[in-house]
Length: 372
Image 1 (cartoon, helix red, strand yellow):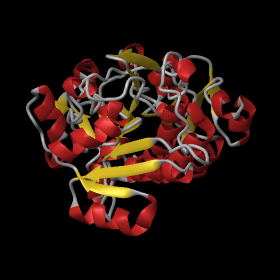
Image 2: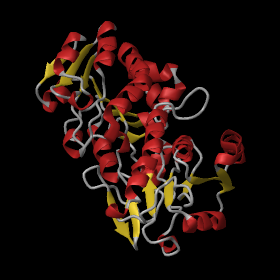
Image 3: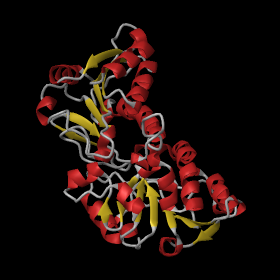
């Protein structure tokens, strides 16, 4: 198979779909790997590193898309990239389609077979291809929130951990999954006063046992959520409904109860965000203010620590890429129902139920695509 990896073009996105080491693995399996020139420069991987691994350097993304049987990326294809996709071509990347009708429309029109990292499931449950980026984003959310709390950025001028004689900042983490756990871990490590909200008794029990007295847990009902948001200096939105648009848990009305200069970091922004006032921002212009409340809603947070993120991502995406390349997408997905859950678009049809429901498409089960 010819596997192509273009340079990412989303604003301040420095990650790359294949590291030189991953390219070398594909080459060792007998595949041809095409890398756009300078695709890995953001992580310190130079063209010569890819050449040493057996890859071929290509000058333009147009040539990558024209020649590749499978395109491996990190972020969802931008409009210009979507226009280059062709019938039957495999696209393997993050997609986050539910809050993105334009992307979905273009992918459906392309006829490409689109496999989304974020909906591939794991044998033990969970979303293993999303997990490492959730870990990164959860940890980064505290760094970003701590910076946004500084007065020069419009925040309250509060230090997360406080100092002797001054109370620490209050941090409310909404959602106790991978993002929330990692956010809480970082906030606790900095000495903040942390409360984690979730609706699952099992999750709350696990978090309570892990953090013991270093963080509090609360059941996430409307009253508890409103109280925690009102008291918080920093609110982390860490809610995920796999493949679907995130629920809007923090309303515009709640902002009026918050402390002026409090900060909200919406890690769910890739799925549309879990704050009613959220809108996607970039690393170039990451924050904005609504009703005196600072919002940080960068849609590709892990791109800010591109080297760590790329290697963490390749650790989990490469094994599936090898199987798809070795067996063909249909055989690979037929053998692995968890990988089959990653199929979002095929043959001009939407094959992920939550995306079809949220965007009003007819739903075609992945099993039907595999049986065709």
